[in-house]
Length: 465
Image 1: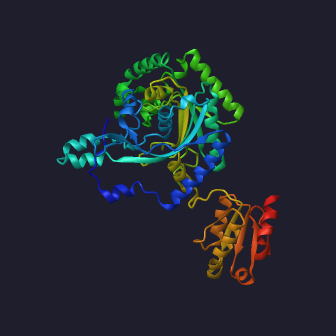
Image 2: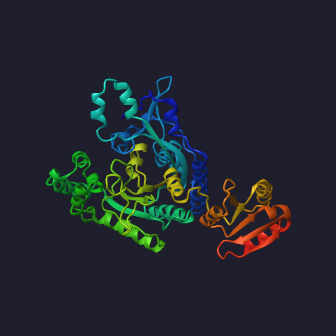
Image 3: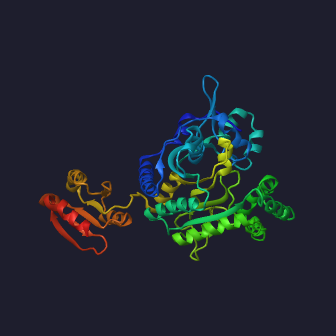
């Protein structure tokens, strides 16, 4: 496995991993929502180690389960090789065996948040360019930076039925709904990739089909065809997309067991009223997920990028923009056997908090998670009085959000609507002098002026309705 090169530009390198306050705030509030929903469904929180013993993860590498996200290694002063977490879900599975959790009542439902690291994928042509450069060490440092992401993993162990996938998908989908995203370009895609018995026949048929059309494939797909032909099915090149549409589909090669598994999962999701799409191009090659896999994606939200006919967003080269993956999951039994040396039924789903927060901010600017009350101030005197009133609201247990840095009432009212506030508290120059405040219903626009002394009682009565 490749190892991280330590020769980097310190300040620039670290800055790429920093999270600024808006990102951290949104990520923390997303985590709170996911945590509450997961607890309701019986998941218990645990904390996984920030480092792992590299030797214990070698079987995963040999099995090709870390090809899609290659770990970052380093050595301690005494020569011991360690790696940083590459997956929160894998960390939970490793902890299962380390702490002999097989002795506990099953199924076990665990959730864990973790910062994970992996080597950044090389750009196309990077190796050829590197060979032309004299300073190989500098080239390697540039080509092999690592990337981090904050993950929230939901892991169910010891449950063989498809209810495991259903519950995990349910938690993720409900979290999207609580965040106001369930119908905002968010899609759940599912595929059955086949077991060891039926996977081989499909890949043989797919490989033969693609080899007969290799001259029409793009350069990247020709390379993928040699080792991972299923990656060709998700290539964004127009020529490859046309070929993929006519290619054999894995659903036609599934054994009776795999067909039943997929059918059962879809029936569960129908009962739970979770919308989904079957995506025969979804395989997660080189990942620790298999048999049943799923992803939750968001459509890129870039102003002016979509045509009036509603076509896909396109990048600078005119190719469709890839949807942003905010969650993924599936069966992890093969990975569990590699980590622990024993058979274990494992299903996991992972939310990518950074990607989710980033997309929310693109849609909403200053993202504030839903609240009942939003505080609006107008003028210097009102702004100075705001902190005192906000503290009174906090002590009274009233959940309130604000944007004190804004001066425009129009902008602040838009933010109040965006976060779903039922009431807006408006403090202007006159109200600051009179010790009053305007309580405005954001839906109807009806408002009334209330004494600041009576504001708490007034709000609590309103919020009970």
